[in-house]
Length: 451
Image 1: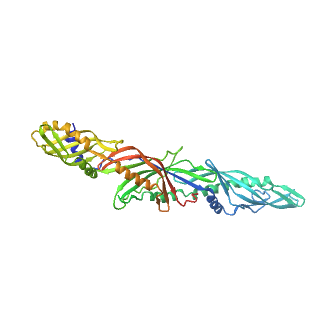
Image 2: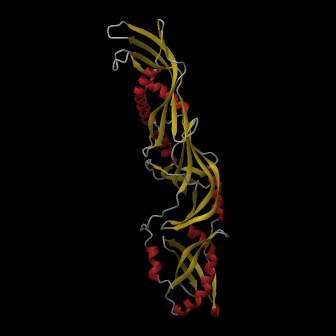
Image 3: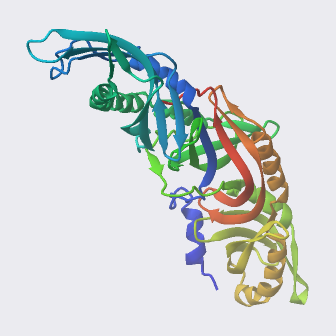
C-alpha cells in the first residue's frame, strides 16, 4: 500500500521544477529548388564579357600568339548527380606571328572563331550553409576550325589555342569556385524563415488555441544536381506545442543551427502533436466525474467525495480526495498514468491509497473501504480526451491547408493522428503525444537563386 510519505510530498513540491520533459521531435519536409538559369545569369555578370586576354606576341614565353576570349552567349549550366557542367560559348580572336628564323621577316595573320568551353564542378553543402564547388577543366569544342591565313600560307593553330586555353582554364575554374562559395545564399534565405517559424499561429480562434513550433535543427541530404535545377532535400526537426491563451504566447527563439549533413536518404515526415491538459483543468474534469459520489459500506455506512485535487510529476500521478459522511478525512491516492486508445480515455492504473482521518475506527473502516472505493475510483477517475483530440485535429488540418509565414514560407500537407506515441506528466500537467501520418511540406517563397 502507498504510504503518506510517498504521496503527500508531491503536493508540497508543486513549485519545485521537475526534470524537463523530452517530447518527441517532429520532422517537416523542406525541398529547395534552385534553377540554374538564375545562377548562370549571375555568373555571367560576375565574370564579365572578357574571360581571357593576351595582347602581346611575346607574352607569355614568346609564344607568338595574341589571344582574346569573350563571351558571345549566356552561359549554360547542366547537372548530373552531384556535378554541374558550366558551358560558356565564347569568341576567340587570335593573331599569330610566324618567323622562319631570327633574321627572317615575320608573317602575321588573324582569325576569329567560336568555341564552347566546359567546366565540370562537383558541389557539396558545408555545415555553415555554403556551397563548395570543386571545378576542373573539361573538354572544349571549336565551332569552326581555327585556321589563320597570311598571304598564301594557311596555318591550323588549334594546338596553340588549346595550349593557351589549357594554361588559363584553371584560373577560370578558381573564379567559378569563388563565385559559388561567396554567392551561395542558403543561410541568408533560410535564416529569414527560421526566425519566423517560431512565431505563434492561431489555429482555433474560438478556443484561442495557438500552435508553436520550436525548431531544433535541420537535416540535409546531399545536393542533387538535376538537369535544369539544383535540389536540396531537408527535414526540419521541431517540437510542436499547443497552448490556450488570449494573447499570442511566446515560444523559444533559437538561433539557426549548422546544417546536419545526412549520409543517406532523410527519414520520412513525422508529426507528433500534443493533446495536453493542466492539473488545474484536470481537477475540474475529474471533480465533475467523481464529486458527490457515494460509496456504500457494510453496516449501512456511507462515504462520499467532497473534493478532488490532482497533481503529478514525471513518475506518478496523485489525487488528494476529501471524504465526508461516516468517514471524515483525506484520501491520498496514487497511480500510474495510463491510456486506453480504444476508448480514448486517460486513467490511473494500479491504484492504491492512504487514508488520513481522526475517526476512531479508521483502520478497520479503511480495510472495508478499500474494495468498494477503489472500484468506484477506477470507473470515475477517467478523462475522455476524444473531444480535445477532435479539436486539435481540426486545428492542425486548417493549419496544413496553406498557412503562410508572411511572404517567406508556406506550410502545406495533410495528416491525421494514428496512435499515441508518448504519455508525459510533470508538475504542470499531462500530455499525450499523437503520431500523425501523412505529408507535411514547408516551402520557401520567392527564392530564385541561392548561388
